[in-house]
Amino acid sequence: MTIKVINEQQNFQEVMQVLFTHLEPSKVMRFWAGCKLDEGDYLQLKEKLFAQDNVDILYEKIQAYQDME
Picture (cartoon, rainbow, N blue to C red):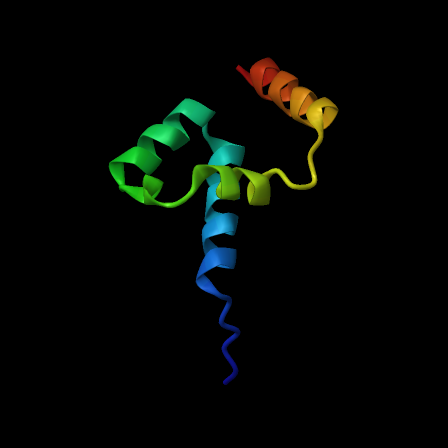
């Protein structure tokens, strides 16, 4: 049996993306604070999470999220 092991950073990014997809950002941030995950550099994390997104894409994502409510 072969097991594929991804590194910790890849796993963390995937988990955060799932949270941001299914929860409103304020809930993700409260969860993050509760888990004391904020000890890292938020600016580096933000760059990794949204590296492919520009302002127009982020605006569309925000609009789509608000339309779901």
